[in-house]
Every structure is written in structure tokens, then in C-alpha cells.
Amino acid sequence: MSTVRSIPSTSLPQNRKCKECTAIVELPASRCTKCRARRQEKRRQSTKQRATHVMENIDVNSQGVTETKKRKANTASVEDDRKRKKRKLQNFVKKMPVLQPVPNSENHSADSSETDRPEQFMNASEMHRRLKKLASSWTPGKTFRFNAYFSVIVDSKNPDNEKQSKLFARDISKIAGLPFNHNSYSKVAHKRDGDRFSLHTLTFPCNCVNDTTPKNSQSSLATWLSSQTSKEKSSECDGFIEIGSADDESHPLEIPAFITISFESTSATHHFIKMSSADNVARGLKAAINNPRVSDEAKESAQERLNDMTGTTQEHENRVLGGYKATLSNPSTSESAKDHAREVLDAAGVADYTGSTEAEFNEHDTRVLAGYKAALSNPRVSAEAKLHAEEYLRERGAV
Image (cartoon, rainbow, N blue to C red; front, top):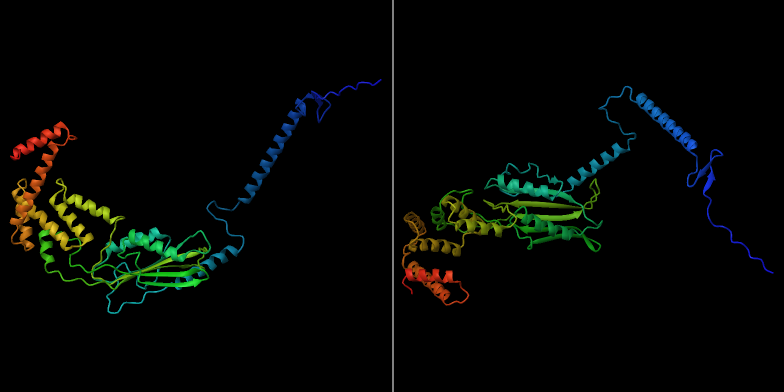
């Protein structure tokens, strides 16, 4: 006859013996209350002794030492490393190309370097600010020179110098306002290192031209128009803008590439665009000229700036003269404005400015009347607009 074995109990004990004495404690505690209090007191005493020992050592080491004295390097390796980096930087600057002097050229401007040594910048933003400052303080009639470099950190150890030079050419033409087309370069110099260029240099021709208009001129538009009749044909500048990117193996910070820029202009006057978007500025100047709330002096200043930016073409002159012709035939224009328009037209050499202008004004009036007539028969036009059109046509006898 088989016997039934009893299943052992799997329940855990609820009590256990203390680790330091014979007292019984409840789980999950491993020590009794007295042993825990005794252990915490020992820890407090040990922490207090360590803190006292540390304070004693600080008091001993601080004797005879001032608070402002700095700690010196323990070894001479740090000083040797600084000297080595300084020597590398000096050799790096000496290897930069130096511009050759232009024959029969005058002295440099006040902001130009006396030794033609390339100027070092920390980044491209500092170089852009320096160029803008030189442009604002440059003296017309003197050769403009600028030779500088800065290092650029790239993601790869083998930077794409061709791409770097093209990107910086685009930025320097738009941000700093140098007068050249960054998409059209006249010369390319490169040095191939395997599948890439270790040196890539682009040379752009300077696009500035001579201009007889004085800088910051406050003359009226009539004087400006009269001076255009005797204006001689301008000659191109033989200056250049050279932008390059090359591997930088001698930089003390081991930066893998650096950017160089050389700019020289021999033009008598030079135009710098100091805005991010010339088109937006031109539109703003045109709006100021046509704004009736803007004063005449501000309009003349805006016209001069617009002429400096866009140039004085025949089409632009015809538009200006046509506007003054329309002023003479406009019944809403004051007599003083008409007198000023006659002075401008006389200074420009326009003898007969009555017949063609009246015909143009009549044609414009006919178009306006036709528009109001079309509004009367348009079902999409509101009743209020139709009433206004009917009153306008009745006043002019067109109904």
C-alpha cells in the first residue's frame, strides 16, 4: 500500500536572527533597533573624524600662500607645446601669398596695410565687418587693397576646397558687397591631391566702373540730368578678387582647411552694396519716390541712391522725363511743382514737351473712363462702386 507524501511548505519565515546579536527581528530588517542605532553612531563619528583631518591638512598647506597666486604647471610639457604652436602659426602666416605692388599706383588708403601682410581673422563674419568698414572710409582715387585669411572647421579630414572657395565667393559678394559676379570667374588655379583638390583658387574680375557723380552728392535732379549730357564713357577697372581654399596642415589647432581672399581695385571710384538684397532696397527707394507723404529732399536723396545702384540708362532717363512731362498736364499738380518740372526739362535739353504729353494724358483719361463704364455693366461690382463710377462719369460728361 503506497503512502502519500506530504508537500513541503513553501512559505518563507516571517522572523530572523539579528546579524550582530541574538535578538529576533522581523523581515526584511537584518538588524535589531539597538544594533542599527549603534551602527549609525559609528558612521557619524567616522565622518566627523575624516572632516577634521581634511580641514587640518588645508590649514597646513595654506600657510604662506596668497589667495591671488596661481598654480604653476607641474611639468614643462605645457610650455613647450605653447611654443611649438606659436612657431607653427608664424610659419603659417609667412607662407601666405603677398600681393605685388601695382605699377604707377598711388599710396594705400589709411586703412590699408603698410607691409601687405595678410590679415588674420577668427571667422568669416569678422572679415565681412572689416570689408564694410574699409568701404565706408575708403578715399576715392586711391588703390583699394585687401588681403586676409581665416581658418574654417570642416566635418571631414579631407575637405572639399573647390566647394569651400565657391561658397565663400558667393557669401563675400552678397554680404560684404564686393563688386564681382561669383558665378563668373576668369581664372582657376588648383593643386590635385588624389581625387580631390588640396588647393583651389578662383580669380574674379572687378566689375566696378568710373563714375563722375560725386560721392554723397546732395545736388538736385536738374543738376544731375544736366551733367549726364557731358558724361564720358567709363572705363573698366583692371582690379581683381582672388578667393582660395587650401589644406591647413600647419595650423596650431590642426584645423584642416583655411580660406584666403585678396581684393584689389584700381578704379577712381568704387561702389559697395551694403545691403543683403539690392532688389528689395531698389523697390523701397522707388516706393519712397512715389509716396506723396515723403518730402522733396528725401525723394531727391532716394533718386540719387537709386541711380547709384541701378545706373543711368536711357530708358531710366526717359521714364524720369516722362514723369515730369505728365506733371505739366496734370490739373491736380500745384504751380510750384510744374515750375520745378519745367526747370528739369529745360536742363535736360527737352525743348517741346507739350504736344506728346497732352496726347498721352488724354489717352490715359480715355482708359480711365472706359474702366468706369465697364464697372457699370459688371454684375460682380457692388452697388456702391457703381454709384461712384456713375458720379465720376457724370462729372466729366461721359454718361
